[in-house]
Image (tube, rainbow, N blue to C red; front, top):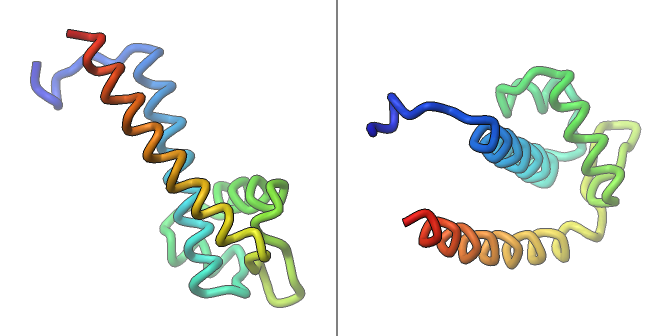
Length: 106
């Protein structure tokens, strides 16, 4: 079946939504790192995401202690380097897991 004509199921929808959320959080984090301090409106303009979506990502990243608010806008904390390193290792593990899952489908 071609990519365009595949039928979506709840399990594939959940996987894609979670991946989209991770991508968005990483985009917001990288933008704060590269342009901070930065506000919601500017983050929205740079990432192309609606402001309410940016707010959610900022809240999530703040709850994890990776960013913090300042009078000028969001800025990264000292946890940024550790977090990016951990994230890279986690993504490597996920690639391995996904490869194994794909093998199980055959």
